[in-house]
Structure formats: C-alpha cells, structure tokens
Amino acid sequence: MKSDPAGPGAYPAEAAGLAWLAEARGASCVTVHEVDDRHIALAELKESRPTREAAHRFGAALAITHRAGAPAFGCPPEGWSGPCFIGRQPMPVGDWRGWGEFYADARVLPYAERAVERGNLSKAELDRVRRTGDLIRSGIFDDDEPPARLHGDLWAGNVMWTATGAVLLDPAAHGGHRETDLAMLALFGAPFLAEVLAGYDDVSALREGWRERVPLHQLFPLAVHAVGHGRSYGVELLRACAAVDALAAGT
Image (cartoon, rainbow, N blue to C red):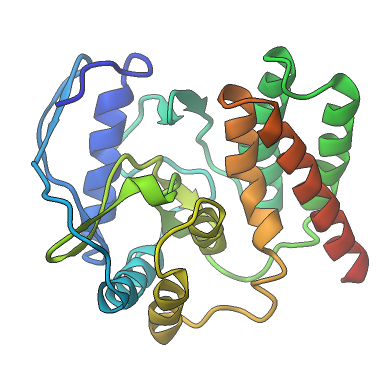
C-alpha cells in the first residue's frame, strides 16, 4: 500500500491509468484493490528474474496495449477527468490534433521550464530547448500513426518481472506516440531490451528510422528528470536536443 500521494487525485489517476491499460488485454498490469485520495492498495507481486523469453512476450504484449489506441494525443485515461501526474510532477492532458504540437508544448517545455526554477537548466539553455521545441511543433516529425495507449512512465523500475512475466506499475497513462514508451525503456536500462523490441516488432512492426528517433522520444523523460533529479539530466536533455536538431537537419 502507498500513502504518500504526489497531490490530490494522484492515486485515483494511477488506478484509472492501470484500468485503461489493462482494458487493452496486452501487457499485464498490477491489480488495484482499493484507492482513494490518501492511499492505493495494490496486489502483492513476487519478483522474479527476467528471462529472454519473458522479455519477448512482454514486447509483444506491449504492442497490443499500444495498438488499443487513444482518442487523441495527450488525452487522459478514458473516464478520468481529474489531474494526471508523472512521478510527483503534474502532467498536462488534453486533446491535441498533431503529435509535434502536443509533445513540445505538453511533454517537453513545461518540465524544461520547471528545471530552470530548480536550477538544473539555465535560462540560456531553456532557450536552446525551446528552439528544439519549435522544430518539433512544426510537425517535421509527425507521421500518420494514430495515438497509442501509452504507459507514459515506462522506465525499468515500473516493469516488475514475476514468474508469469512482466507486470506494469505506476503509469502516467495518456495518448501519445508508441516510440516514446520504447525510448523510455531504452533510456533507463530495461533488461533484455533487444528481446523486448523483437517481440514488439513481431506484433507491430516498427517504422523505418525509429532508432534515430530515440533521442526525440527521450526528451520527455529527460525533461521530467531534469526537474527533480539534478543538473546531470539537464545536461542530457541538451545533448538529446542536439541530436534532434541534427536529425531534423537531415530530413
């Protein structure tokens, strides 16, 4: 049971996200037994060692979850109208037509601005991030993929490996681009990542150039971590911006 919410509505938002992801009948999600504004009680899970086979199955299941879709980029879990969070940070939700506009304005820049307030980015560095945001907002990286049903905070610590396979925890669920979840797995060292990606690709083929776009989709988690986890993430955010600018120059 957890009883230290990020803010009012945080635990109900977490429960709504888990239910929305579970409805896809793809990746397994931890069961919620009880929830209110003060606590959330989750099913007890027994951790086990990950295996290559389990990683492949998880990738395939995650593809099914993503493919279940979402009404819009930036939408919250279906039926949830309260605030949303990623970790302890508020997370904007809404209805964006274009991915680039959504991603720049709701997933990168708000957190980069907060990182300046925390002293983890300078104002000049924020201007640098904003220029990259302008590129993304222009639609240069937009494609014809519909919004995917994202976990939204898919770092390795939010995937628990059990004897029956991987189980998702602590989502920041929303509608987004499927490559964002995959890039977050890569950023924070998911075990047997190659097998996860192979299983994913078996079910839902990854688009050409996805590897080159990994820094683009890592801007979101890097910006979030630059708020609460120190200057080093601000530096990594700037490096990812440089990679995105170079990618845009080559398109």
